[in-house]
Each structure stands twice: as C-alpha cells, then as structure tokens.
Image 1 (cartoon, helix red, strand yellow):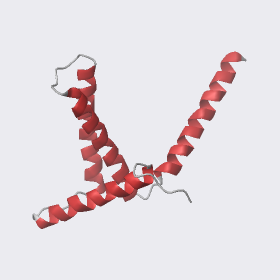
Image 2 (cartoon, helix red, strand yellow):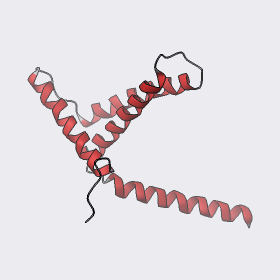
Image 3 (tube, rainbow, N blue to C red):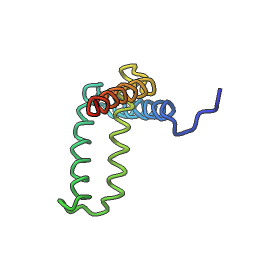
Image 4 (cartoon, helix red, strand yellow):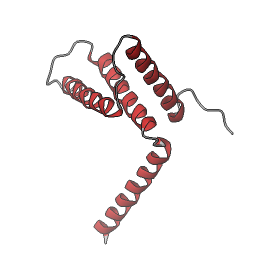
Length: 117
C-alpha cells in the first residue's frame, strides 16, 4: 500500500479530529461543555459568513487588511469544520467525494449530449 501523504484527505480528517478532541478537552478543563456536532455545524455557518466577507473584499466590495492571508485562514477553518463533521458523522469523504464527482460528471455528460441531439 502506498504511503499516505501528510496532506491527503484521510490524514487531514484524522488531524482535524485530533484537534477537535483537543478543543473538547480544553473546554472541559476550563469548566465549559465541549461543542456538539450541531454546534460545530453552526460554527461552520459563521465561518462561511466570514469567508463571504473576504470574498467580497477580494472583489473590491469591502475593505479588509491582509485579505489574502485571512482568506487562506478562513478557507482552512471551513475545511476543518467539514472534516470534523465528516468524522463525527462517520462519513468517508474520499469515497463520497469520488461518488459526487462521478455523479455530476454523468449529469454533465447527459446535458451535453441532449444539447447536441
């Protein structure tokens, strides 16, 4: 079996889950409740809003200092949330991503065929 890259999806998902467990342990140590899956999803929605603000800044619609660094960070935040949620719900993202890409590819191919015919 080929050795996994430190940046392949499964490794990133495992690293994200580890960080999520660290967040939960820190919350417990400080007397707070760890976030539930639903609260992580709510946090993701907030991150998407932050991402949109940065996308608007890149389009010249808002003024944000250091927008490129912040955009990269926010995209990574969003990815982290997705990876943690996939782990929390037992979703194999590699498999599901491949399935989704294949399904969309088939739909696009049918669409192209219909336009020609």
